[in-house]
Amino acid sequence: MSIKNKIPKIGARTVKTALAVMASMLIFAGTGYIGSLLARTDWAFWSGLGVFLTKQDAIFGCVGAVVCMQQTVKNSLRSGADRLLGTAVGGAVGLFLFWVNMNIWEGKLLILWVTFGTILSIWLVLLMKRPDACAVCAITLLIILVSVDRNAPFLYAVNRMLDTAIGIAVSLAVNRLVRPIRLRAAAMAGEGDEKAGVAKE
Image (cartoon, rainbow, N blue to C red; front, top):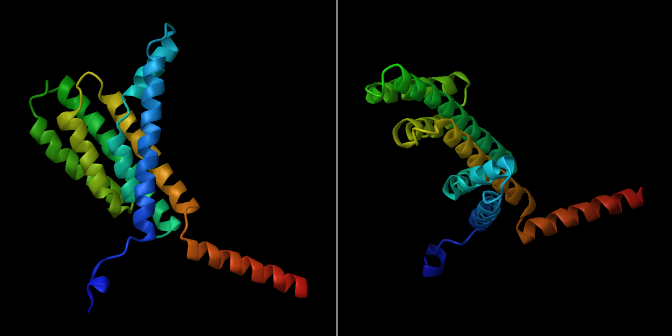
Protein backbone atom coordinates (compact mmCIF):
# COMPACT_ATOMS: atom_id res chain seq x y z
CA MET A 1 0.00 0.00 0.00
CA SER A 2 1.41 3.39 -1.00
CA ILE A 3 1.91 6.28 1.40
CA LYS A 4 -0.65 8.25 -0.58
CA ASN A 5 -3.37 5.71 0.24
CA LYS A 6 -2.52 5.81 3.96
CA ILE A 7 -2.96 9.57 4.29
CA PRO A 8 -6.61 10.43 5.04
CA LYS A 9 -8.27 12.92 2.73
CA ILE A 10 -9.82 16.15 3.91
CA GLY A 11 -13.48 15.36 3.33
CA ALA A 12 -16.57 17.52 2.97
CA ARG A 13 -17.61 17.03 6.60
CA THR A 14 -14.21 18.23 7.82
CA VAL A 15 -14.38 21.35 5.67
CA LYS A 16 -17.98 22.08 6.69
CA THR A 17 -17.11 21.65 10.37
CA ALA A 18 -14.29 24.17 10.03
CA LEU A 19 -16.61 26.58 8.19
CA ALA A 20 -19.25 26.23 10.91
CA VAL A 21 -16.67 26.97 13.62
CA MET A 22 -15.38 30.00 11.69
CA ALA A 23 -18.91 31.32 11.13
CA SER A 24 -19.74 30.83 14.82
CA MET A 25 -16.60 32.72 15.86
CA LEU A 26 -17.49 35.60 13.54
CA ILE A 27 -21.05 35.76 14.90
CA PHE A 28 -19.89 35.81 18.52
CA ALA A 29 -17.24 38.42 17.72
CA GLY A 30 -19.94 40.55 16.12
CA THR A 31 -22.42 40.19 18.98
CA GLY A 32 -19.67 40.92 21.51
CA TYR A 33 -18.69 44.10 19.67
CA ILE A 34 -22.32 45.25 19.36
CA GLY A 35 -22.88 44.41 23.02
CA SER A 36 -19.91 46.51 24.11
CA LEU A 37 -21.31 49.48 22.19
CA LEU A 38 -24.83 49.06 23.60
CA ALA A 39 -23.51 48.67 27.15
CA ARG A 40 -22.16 52.23 26.99
CA THR A 41 -25.53 53.81 26.24
CA ASP A 42 -27.58 55.67 28.82
CA TRP A 43 -30.82 53.78 28.11
CA ALA A 44 -31.39 51.01 30.62
CA PHE A 45 -32.90 48.51 28.15
CA TRP A 46 -30.16 48.82 25.53
CA SER A 47 -27.46 48.92 28.18
CA GLY A 48 -28.83 45.73 29.75
CA LEU A 49 -29.03 44.06 26.34
CA GLY A 50 -25.45 45.08 25.69
CA VAL A 51 -24.27 43.52 28.94
CA PHE A 52 -26.19 40.34 28.08
CA LEU A 53 -24.54 40.12 24.65
CA THR A 54 -21.07 40.56 26.11
CA LYS A 55 -21.68 37.52 28.33
CA GLN A 56 -21.94 35.16 25.33
CA ASP A 57 -19.16 32.57 25.15
CA ALA A 58 -17.95 31.49 21.71
CA ILE A 59 -16.55 28.18 22.96
CA PHE A 60 -20.02 26.77 23.70
CA GLY A 61 -21.31 27.83 20.30
CA CYS A 62 -18.30 26.33 18.53
CA VAL A 63 -18.63 23.06 20.45
CA GLY A 64 -22.31 22.95 19.51
CA ALA A 65 -21.40 23.51 15.85
CA VAL A 66 -18.78 20.75 15.90
CA VAL A 67 -20.99 18.17 17.63
CA CYS A 68 -23.99 19.01 15.49
CA MET A 69 -22.15 18.62 12.16
CA GLN A 70 -23.06 15.17 10.87
CA GLN A 71 -22.95 13.45 7.49
CA THR A 72 -26.54 14.39 6.65
CA VAL A 73 -28.80 17.32 7.50
CA LYS A 74 -31.27 14.91 9.11
CA ASN A 75 -28.61 13.55 11.44
CA SER A 76 -27.48 17.10 12.20
CA LEU A 77 -31.03 18.04 13.18
CA ARG A 78 -31.21 15.03 15.48
CA SER A 79 -27.83 15.80 17.05
CA GLY A 80 -28.71 19.47 17.45
CA ALA A 81 -32.04 18.64 19.07
CA ASP A 82 -30.32 16.25 21.50
CA ARG A 83 -27.73 18.85 22.46
CA LEU A 84 -30.33 21.59 22.93
CA LEU A 85 -32.56 19.28 24.97
CA GLY A 86 -29.64 18.15 27.11
CA THR A 87 -28.62 21.76 27.75
CA ALA A 88 -32.19 22.73 28.68
CA VAL A 89 -32.78 19.79 31.05
CA GLY A 90 -29.35 20.03 32.64
CA GLY A 91 -29.76 23.78 33.02
CA ALA A 92 -33.22 23.48 34.60
CA VAL A 93 -32.20 20.75 37.06
CA GLY A 94 -28.96 22.57 37.84
CA LEU A 95 -30.74 25.87 38.56
CA PHE A 96 -33.29 24.18 40.81
CA LEU A 97 -30.66 22.30 42.83
CA PHE A 98 -28.46 25.40 42.95
CA TRP A 99 -31.33 27.34 44.51
CA VAL A 100 -32.10 24.52 46.96
CA ASN A 101 -28.47 24.21 48.00
CA MET A 102 -27.90 27.93 48.47
CA ASN A 103 -31.22 28.89 50.09
CA ILE A 104 -32.08 25.84 52.22
CA TRP A 105 -28.74 24.18 52.93
CA GLU A 106 -26.59 27.33 52.70
CA GLY A 107 -24.23 25.75 50.16
CA LYS A 108 -23.03 23.02 52.53
CA LEU A 109 -24.17 19.91 50.62
CA LEU A 110 -22.84 20.60 47.12
CA ILE A 111 -21.37 17.12 46.64
CA LEU A 112 -24.71 15.53 47.52
CA TRP A 113 -26.63 17.72 45.08
CA VAL A 114 -24.11 17.16 42.31
CA THR A 115 -24.46 13.40 42.72
CA PHE A 116 -28.25 13.48 42.95
CA GLY A 117 -28.54 16.00 40.10
CA THR A 118 -26.41 13.89 37.76
CA ILE A 119 -28.65 10.89 38.32
CA LEU A 120 -31.84 12.93 38.00
CA SER A 121 -30.84 14.79 34.83
CA ILE A 122 -29.70 11.64 33.02
CA TRP A 123 -32.85 9.81 34.10
CA LEU A 124 -35.03 12.61 32.72
CA VAL A 125 -33.50 12.55 29.25
CA LEU A 126 -33.68 8.75 29.21
CA LEU A 127 -37.34 9.09 30.16
CA MET A 128 -37.71 11.27 27.05
CA LYS A 129 -35.99 8.49 25.04
CA ARG A 130 -33.06 10.72 24.06
CA PRO A 131 -29.99 8.81 25.34
CA ASP A 132 -27.61 10.85 23.16
CA ALA A 133 -28.48 13.91 25.25
CA CYS A 134 -27.23 12.35 28.51
CA ALA A 135 -23.63 13.58 28.35
CA VAL A 136 -24.52 17.18 27.47
CA CYS A 137 -27.23 17.21 30.13
CA ALA A 138 -24.87 16.06 32.88
CA ILE A 139 -22.10 18.45 31.76
CA THR A 140 -24.46 21.44 31.81
CA LEU A 141 -25.68 20.49 35.28
CA LEU A 142 -22.11 20.19 36.60
CA ILE A 143 -21.05 23.55 35.15
CA ILE A 144 -23.99 25.31 36.80
CA LEU A 145 -23.58 23.64 40.19
CA VAL A 146 -19.79 23.70 40.43
CA SER A 147 -18.40 26.66 38.51
CA VAL A 148 -21.19 29.14 37.81
CA ASP A 149 -21.26 32.68 39.20
CA ARG A 150 -23.40 32.43 42.33
CA ASN A 151 -24.83 35.90 41.76
CA ALA A 152 -26.29 35.15 38.32
CA PRO A 153 -26.93 31.42 37.76
CA PHE A 154 -30.11 31.96 35.72
CA LEU A 155 -28.40 34.40 33.37
CA TYR A 156 -25.56 31.93 32.94
CA ALA A 157 -27.94 29.09 32.03
CA VAL A 158 -29.82 31.24 29.52
CA ASN A 159 -26.56 32.40 27.95
CA ARG A 160 -25.30 28.85 27.54
CA MET A 161 -28.55 27.76 25.89
CA LEU A 162 -28.33 30.71 23.51
CA ASP A 163 -24.66 29.96 22.75
CA THR A 164 -25.51 26.36 21.98
CA ALA A 165 -28.52 27.30 19.85
CA ILE A 166 -26.40 29.69 17.76
CA GLY A 167 -23.77 27.01 17.16
CA ILE A 168 -26.42 24.47 16.19
CA ALA A 169 -28.16 26.89 13.82
CA VAL A 170 -24.86 27.75 12.12
CA SER A 171 -23.94 24.08 11.78
CA LEU A 172 -27.32 23.21 10.25
CA ALA A 173 -27.11 26.13 7.82
CA VAL A 174 -23.60 25.19 6.69
CA ASN A 175 -24.52 21.51 6.36
CA ARG A 176 -27.57 22.42 4.30
CA LEU A 177 -26.04 25.07 2.05
CA VAL A 178 -22.49 23.82 1.51
CA ARG A 179 -22.28 20.68 -0.60
CA PRO A 180 -19.34 19.07 -2.41
CA ILE A 181 -18.97 19.99 -6.07
CA ARG A 182 -19.65 16.44 -7.23
CA LEU A 183 -22.93 16.34 -5.32
CA ARG A 184 -24.01 19.69 -6.72
CA ALA A 185 -23.14 18.48 -10.21
CA ALA A 186 -25.12 15.29 -9.67
CA ALA A 187 -28.10 17.25 -8.36
CA MET A 188 -27.98 19.61 -11.34
CA ALA A 189 -27.70 16.67 -13.70
CA GLY A 190 -30.71 15.06 -12.04
CA GLU A 191 -32.72 18.25 -12.38
CA GLY A 192 -31.67 18.48 -16.02
CA ASP A 193 -32.79 14.91 -16.67
CA GLU A 194 -36.15 15.60 -15.03
CA LYS A 195 -36.68 18.71 -17.13
CA ALA A 196 -35.71 16.81 -20.27
CA GLY A 197 -38.14 14.05 -19.39
CA VAL A 198 -40.95 16.53 -18.88
CA ALA A 199 -40.13 18.18 -22.21
CA LYS A 200 -40.22 14.85 -23.99
CA GLU A 201 -43.60 13.98 -22.53
